[in-house]
Image: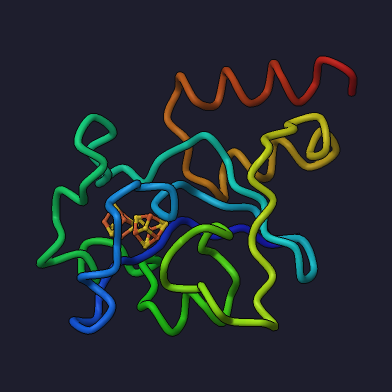
Length: 131
Ligand code: SF4
Ligand code: SF4
């Protein structure tokens, strides 16, 4: 099981297509070839405006922030993201959050995802509700 943080919206020819929904800037859990979105945003995402607060410095501030090609290759954009429209082989992430799926690895994921206290409490209580 692997997990990574976040994601991008960059590259000038892609930039105009981004709708600024912010969904790709939420942390993700990757199991095998499957990417799961979490409800936990990158710490640099302004969840009100849905914009990156460090956009010009994002790669240095957040090494886990992917370029658009990297994000496409790793399947981190939602199915309706303009970046992946028309890509017939593209497999989008699982967007429905089901913490019970990760009950067996919840303690590890809390660390890998670098959750804050409130997020950790929420995740552990939900993940372990059935675990
Ligand atoms: S999911 Fe797509 S449209 Fe939404 S912010 Fe990310 S790149 Fe932009
Ligand atoms: S650093 Fe900015 S662009 Fe990158 S994932 Fe975080 S909020 Fe999104």
